[in-house]
Length: 199
Ligand code: MN3
Image (tube, rainbow, N blue to C red; front, side, top):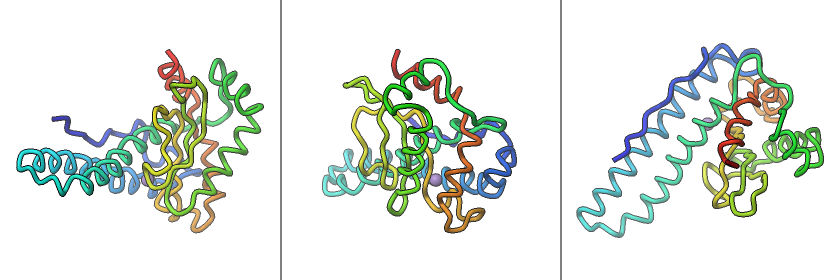
């Protein structure tokens, strides 16, 4: 059975300052993300155990736990690699063209994605993804890690809007966090994911 492990950060926790504090990055990665990794492994073990012992009544709850925890692991794995020191700016190449075509330009996309992420009700995520059936870019506003998820969408850019992602630095001002995060988005990583999704 696959055992998930917490991926290392590709940068020092302080590397995203001043946009994201070292304390937030260290806690968010080392505690929050790690908890989802553990939860995903536990849910898989428990589903296996339920199968072995035919405890079918547990399945609905275990599937919910798997979707939440594995969703959390996947999203955070993307989030950390979507961010980088000395990043920001604007996408280029085929990704830029697709964003321009789909959202009437980068500035228009940026406004949409900002409003979408700031406007998450409670805990959730803002996502730019590739919808594989229609072959188009879509944005998604996820509740927790999986509610509202559009099936078949490959996430390209995933921004965490849970309070733990910003509260220690930005308090209640989620909009200030989302505004700051544009300075550390690594468009080369997003473009790499786009190329892979559309290949
Ligand atoms: Mn988080």
